[in-house]
Length: 306
Image 1 (cartoon, rainbow, N blue to C red):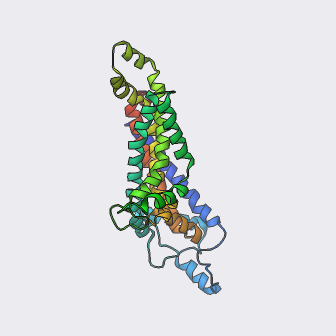
Image 2 (spheres, one colour):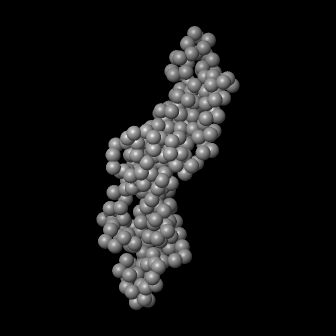
């Protein structure tokens, strides 16, 4: 319980610092959310600033912002889309990003962990070389290159696959493959490294001396220790997949959070930027908290060190 409380308090502090920095940094950006292609008269700008509370001092705005969040759960209105609340925009876009990120992460785990285990088992042999070459290629090819390649090679030739839109059950396949490929490559390399270290440890040599077979050694003895670096990677990677996949979401026209990140920064939509960063920070903290719990379960020495 002490371990869990410590992690929760650290997470709350991180989110608070992240949101505070974002609040003041977005207001330091050049430009104004109300300065479009057509210059508005000064009196209209003054009325807009007064309407959204932007005419007050920075610290007064900061106090109002946290008060609205903590007391009412209100992230504020969008400064660009009239009459639309930031919470509504996040609520509409989050399910699509969550589904896409979850399937991409599941794909990365299903492909990456067995590939890394197989490479570690055949260390310095042909399967290891081929699998790690594939992993390096997956890491080196960025998603904005892989996404069009998948659209051309699969989307235009395989019936049922969609190259754009979010209106049927198969539309998630190609963007999930584009997102999951890079993470599968990282997971494979991390799994291989962890498994190689585990297979060369003393307790595995003891198991071999007692007559344990290769399958039992791999799955029963080495896997739990070998997955520690993978588990540590999956937490922040999952949060990044949910909120940071704006390139893939743009390529496949997925109505997720990624596109809002880009548009909010371009339009100087202060409240939307702050809401998205807060959402992203909470996801990162929750993912890392789950990872810390899993690592403590997999490795009791972590619990005893706290």
